[in-house]
Image (cartoon, rainbow, N blue to C red; front, side, top):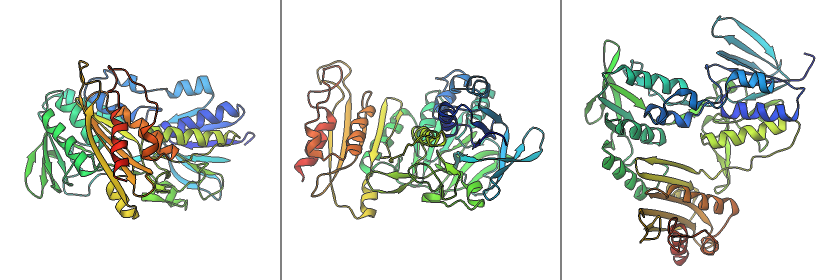
Length: 451
């Protein structure tokens, strides 16, 4: 090789963010990206809205095509190319062209692994039947939409009550499908405390989704190779299609096979510069580990926001700069029809495991001044460390205008604020946006009283 080469495995958020950053800093760098799917830089978060027909074409979910990366940035993106093996000693990867079926070894000087995450698929009878869909890539979203457009679908069963399950339930019930959702826990949204999760469960019922909580999936009923029902430990639900929302796991098998050390939940262990335990090998995105700024422990989270930030840091370093990724606080938002849901920091079960003593406050308020038209209900929960008053986490469930208030709590967590310090935050106020005392500040004040 005449020029130094960076090889990137994975052409979505983290991989392409890193490749772009490296290119800006080192125009002379030879950059090759291998992506086993047909798309690059797509919005996986937009899949439920494409399935629900709020987004009318898949093109709108593609931020940038391989052609644009090649023409505008000089990044050699090769879609439908799967990396089968990493040889860290020889500094090369074995790549298979999925069109021709041929494999070849490609050398590298620096390697970034950005292989993302894989949807959890249960190892149960009938799980390989047709019309059972996972949701993780643009291709998976296209397959669901095509199946719905084909017709003959009335009953949809969603397995799992996490973000994807809830967003897909919203998308489908809004399009008049008969939607049932099965969740093994007694509540949906396991990242919320039980009292807040109960509000989300009720919002789903109000939207027309039938919930089957505290039920374990046992198998799938099939006929002629297609799914026709979902079997739990309590009942059998007829289904024309099934959507799996059981969460994701790091796609780190390739790294593990190459002897690259793994960390939390099987993700690739990295330092704050996104370097792995092998010289010249980096990792970023949903396959890589993060650090939780509240618990001060390694943490795994699969979110597009985190993946992009991982990729930016890795790319700056690969381009000869210096950048670090300090960590996350686990902020996430979603919505179910008119109900918005948000969370950040730690929840009660995590605090219990960590042995941290806490106080909590739950308040109900309005999203706008009570007299202003359109003011909706909002419930805010704040958790604070007993003794010090340090903010530990927060959760919000409410009508329009609720969810983005979580950003105030997330910022306070990054800053290490106490709930007492939050009371005096100079937040914006006008009747169309908030009561005089913002609901987040009211919750902080109530938590401070308990200290």
